Length: 159
Length: 173
Image (tube, rainbow over all chains, first blue to last red; front, side, top):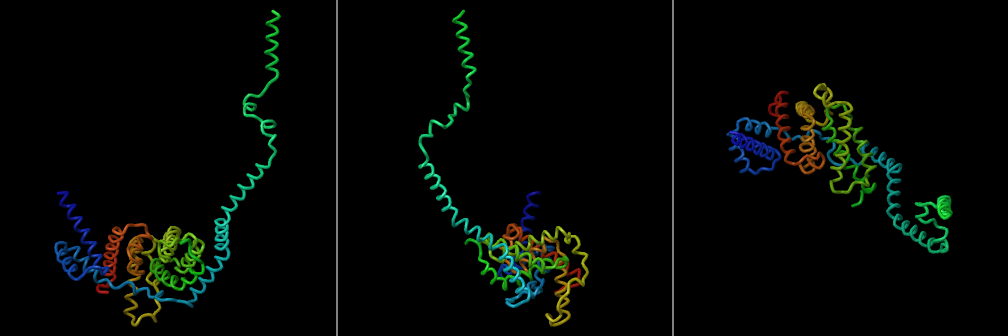
């Protein structure tokens, strides 16, 4: 029962698509003939088909906007506003992006080169003497703890 | 393609503006939102984001996506989606010199009204496909909805439109 209903639904959907294709002018004369034959088994769809095919050409109901309106007031005004908008915002963005793309790589190389040169000419004796070692930070030297330990040994010897 | 130059964009405005005006006028019809305001904001936003336009989508498709997002924000602010059906007939004004007869003018008026009364998801697909003449692939790029779903939605939109026109007494438009 359900499969029969599904089959009918699919057939209806298929016919609706074909009616739409016919209205779009995509079907040939023999294809239209076959469609009309099939629609005889679906009277409601056949009526939809007739109604749809009777619709007028809607492309003609908004005639303004056909062709090119080079000197139309609205076109001229839109051009002026677009040009003004571009000069205020668009050009700034474009220039920024273009400069970034053009010079970002060069700037990276320059910074890298300068850093390397500075590092190369820096005094070598600093390394290992004035630099703080990691263990110094983690285990700070405390004189008091060493003294306490020595005192403790002395006391042991005395005993 | 890295971005889009401002000079090239400025040259395209003469072609893009009228088409976008047409599509947004249809999309916003009856909403109370002025398409001209949305258009100006769309172009200014696009101008600010030109370097992000990669050219994968068409320039017009990209521009329409920006305009659509602005419209959606406006819909949220004004809640016009709920009020669209309440709009008086007089809100759909047409220049009489564009049409050869009063009956033709009235027919266009009714069609515009019928489209404006469609729920937003159906109106959008009708405007993009039938009025702006985009293909489903372009509409899919803008809406993020797959083409099969769009086709199904287009069928329903056409069906609703036909019903609406019948109710308005336009049996054979």
